[in-house]
Image 1: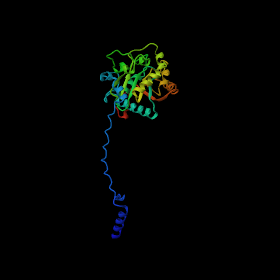
Image 2 (image 1 turned 120 degrees about the vertical axis):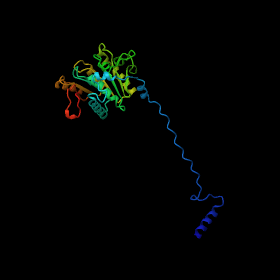
Image 3 (image 1 turned 180 degrees about the vertical axis):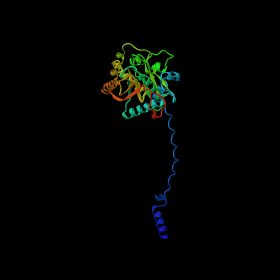
Image 4 (image 1 turned 45 degrees about the horizontal axis):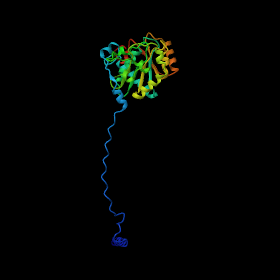
Length: 287
């Protein structure tokens, strides 16, 4: 140890009295106190959230829904079936990245508008999935009556949105926080001229860009009633077919699927107006 101490002293003497101490023994400056991370800035309101919040609210009356066979309460017949259909639609559109879907039927009287409104109410219970529902059946609009919607202020209708006579924000109403609907109060003349207009694609794209819904659902006319639905297919990704038990034939369903599949994907076919459910399925109600 004495030899080691003498060697250190000799080394210090050679460096002189003003030399800095060896690196190993040099005094280190005190480390500054760790800076506290700055609080994140308050997130400004998202433009999309603001657009949704600014839509007029509409709360359908339970008595009207029940009278029109729209399942709005867990005790209503068909409530679990509609929720099951909603979940399957969500899975399909997410897996395939579909953004726009029509609901149609081979012929009138199959209940496509009732099913569309039922799905709208079901989507409203799914808060993390935003849906816009638009009525494109301009010949026999029925969504307003089915949901019991009577605007307090004069409104024109979704047909005027498509024709750029008014805006979606002025026509649409919001159910809950995740569903917006745009309906028509009465039929219009020459609906094909509106539906086939070149501006329709731009209008839908603008709605999509502003509200960024997970899905836009369109209630369109029956396929065999006019050419409106076929002409509108260029604006959508997929189609849901509604058939009526004891009314729609297998041939009509096949023809509808074939005609739709030539332009868009077919999500599936819903058999509506069934009188009885399977007794072993666990539900004691007829659908």
